[in-house]
Image (cartoon, rainbow, N blue to C red; front, top):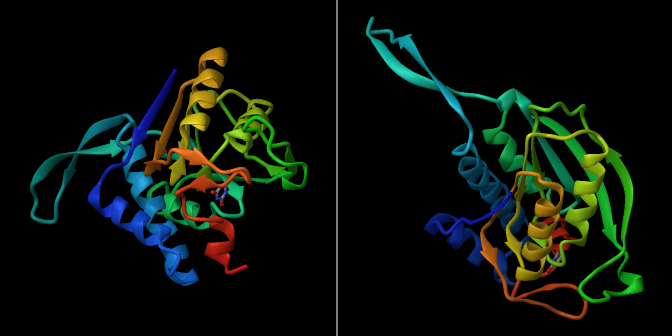
Length: 221
Ligand code: URA
């Protein structure tokens, strides 16, 4: 099963506009990604199951509330390096999450062929995964989908979580189509959230209009 959710909220869209602006300084760019991570976290948590419970307030009154389930079964996987600030926002919401990292690099020297890159994975460290795990992959720009597909394959070697999320800022129709096919062919529950779907990928693999190189802009390199 594959589901795409575009987060069309005014606040999220205004932050994205600031990120797209080439005049936005590095610190504002990085902080913008942190804010978007938090917004994506709020959206994702709406899917989580909850149980009702009663608590007593300091006024001696009992009131019915809720407790969100599975917060301690959540694993956030950061695709280094641009997703680091996005993850910082996500953990504000998923404060009990376990953390994993994947360092994956598009082999740009070899170029893009038919909207695909070779992906060089140089480091993977993932927590133990159980059937109840919910995995959130944090990746800012999902252009061709090559990196995310590689990350999904790495995760599959560590177990079969009950649900996957991709928390992204900009994705493309090409990536969405590939991810849909991947989820359907493996019968996994994959839900993708993004702030925008941009129409094009240029011959260097950058999303257009996009926001440029997210890692360079967030870290000032
Ligand atoms: N990674 C980026 O940082 N930007 C793009 O446009 C595509 C991939």
